[in-house]
Amino acid sequence: MFKHLLLAALIVAAPAACLHAAEPAPPAASDSVAKQTLDAFFAAQWERGLRESPEGATYNGDNRFNDRWSDYSLAAIEKREAEDRVALAELRAIDRDALAAADRLNYDTFEWQLEHAIAAQRFRGYLQPVSHQGGVQTASGIAEVMPFTSTKDYRDWLARMAAVPVLVDQSITLMKEGVATGNVPPKVLMERVPAQIAAQIVEDPVQSPFYRPFTRFPDAVPAADRKALAADARRTIEEKIVPAYRKLQAYFGDEYLPHTRDGIAVTDLPDGADYYTYLAGYYTTTDLTPAQIHDIGLGEVARIRAEMEKLKAQTGFEGTLAEFFTWLRTDPKFFEKTPEALLERYRAVAKRIDPELVKVFHTIPRLPYGVRAIPDNVAPDTTTAYYMPGAADGSRPGYYYVNLYKPETRPTWEMIPLSLHEAVPGHHFQFARALEMPDAPMFRRTAYFVAYGEGWGLYAERLGYDMGLYDDPYDRMGQLAYDMWRAVRLVVDTGMHSQGWSRERAIEYFMDNSPKTRQDVVNEIDRYIGTPGQALAYKIGQLKISELREKAARELGPKFDLRAYNDAVLETGSVPLDVLEKHIDAWIAARK
Image (cartoon, rainbow, N blue to C red; front, top):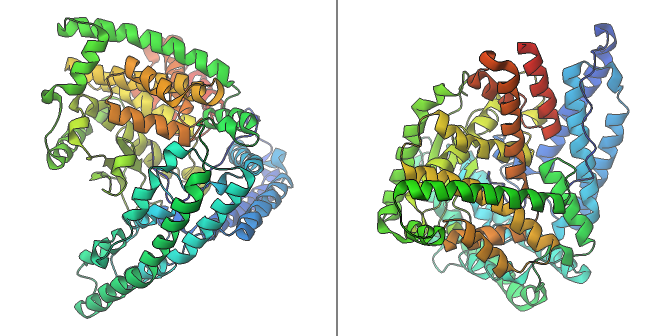
C-alpha cells in the first residue's frame, strides 16, 4: 500500500468506460494543433491541481504552496467539482482523432480520470473527512515530506500550523453536513479517533507532533533565526493548535461519535449498493461485480491453503494448519524484542534485496529509497508498512515506512515479501520508473491506478523466487501468507459490504486462513471497512500481470526474457488493466 496524505480526495468509479484500443497514427501534419492544445490543457490542469491541493503539491516536491492547506469549505468543494465538469468539456472539444497514438493514450487516461471524478460527486465522500487512519487529527504528518532546509521552509510550516484552526473548523462543518444527510462512518472505526485527537492536545508545546521539525535545524538556518522560529512554534501550538484540537475533541466526542453508524457495510449509506459496485469497478479498473470477485477470492483461498499444507509438511511441523499458524504467530524466535532491533532488521532485509534486482530487471530506476519508522502517533491504528513516493523532481527519495508498534506482533517471516512489495521492486520501482517517462505529461508520470500499482506490488512479492531470496521455508510461508492475505481480502471485503458479513466473521475468516497476527488482522479488517473496495485491486491486478507473464512466456518460448517483460510492464506508468494488456500484447507481437 502506498500512503496518501491528509484528507486526500476519494475518487470512485463510473461503470468501466474502457480506454480506446490502439489505432493507426494520423498524418503528422494534422496532429500539431490538437497536440499543442492538448499539451496546454494538461499543463493548465496540472497547475490547477497543485493550486487546489497544496498538500498534493508538497507531496510532489513543488514547495510553492507549503504555507497553506487545501480549502475544504463546501463552497470550494463545489467549485472544484464544477471545474472538473468544465475540464471534461474542454478535453472533449479537442480533436482526439488528430492525435498521435501516445497522445491518444494520454487523452484517454485523463478522460477516464475526469469521468470517474465526476461520477464520484454523487456520493459526496468528502462528508467523511476523518477516518481512523487519518484526517485533520493527523495533519502534522505532512511534515514528513516537507523540506526543512532554510528559514523560509520553517516559516512555511509555521504558516501552515497557524491555519490549523481553519482546517479544523472546515472538517467539523463537513462532519455536521454528513450527520444531517446520513453520510457518516462506522462507529467501530471512529472509536479509534479520540486517542488520535488527544495526542495533539499537549501541555508542553515541545511535545506536540507539530514541533518535531524545530527539535533539529540544518546548518543552513542561521543560529540567530532558530530561537525565534522555535518560540513562534511553541506560541502557535499553545495559542492556536491546542485550542483547535480541544474544539475538535469536544465536537467529536459529544456530537459526532454518537451519530456514527452501528453497521459496517457501505450499503448502509445513501445509495450504498451503487456506491460499492462503483468502488469495485474503480479500484479494479474492470467490470467485475462484487459477486464475481467474491468467487475469485474463494478459489484463490483454496489454492493457497493447499500450498501452505505442502510447505507445513516440508518444515516437519506435526499438527494442523491452524496449529502451525498459531506457532508462527507466537514463537519468540520469529520476533524482535525492541522497535530498534526491528527497524535494523528491516533495513538489513532491504540491503539484501538490492543487489539481486539485476536478476529480474534490465532497467533500475535512478531515484533512491530509504527505510523509516511509521510515526508513533499513528502506528497503533495503521498497517504493517506503507510506501511514500519520492518527489516528482527527484529532490526527495522514496521512503518505505515500517510499523514498529508492538514488535512482538511483527513476525520476521513476513519481512521479505513485505519489503519486496512496499519498497523494491514493488512500489518504489513502479513510482520511480513512471517519473522517468521523459515525454509523458506530469499527470501520467504521477498517476496511480490501484489495480496496476498494488497488483504490481503483489506480483513483485513472487519475484523473490526469481531473485533467489526465498531460501528459508519460513520466508516462503511468509510469501504464501501475503498471497493469502490478498486472496482473503476479496472474500471479506465483498462479504462485509455486499453479503452481510459481520466484522467478527471477517476477522475470524482471516485468522482461519492466514498466520498474520490478530493485531494486523483487526487493523486490516478495519481498513477494509473504512475504505470499501480498495483491497479488491491487489489480487485482481496481480492475477492479470501474472496471466500476461504466462502468456508472454508461452507465445515467445525461448525468446522470452523475464527482465524485459518486467521492464515492459513498468514502462507504461500506471494505467488501467485493459490498457496494460493491450501494451503487453503489442510487446509480444513485436518480439515475435
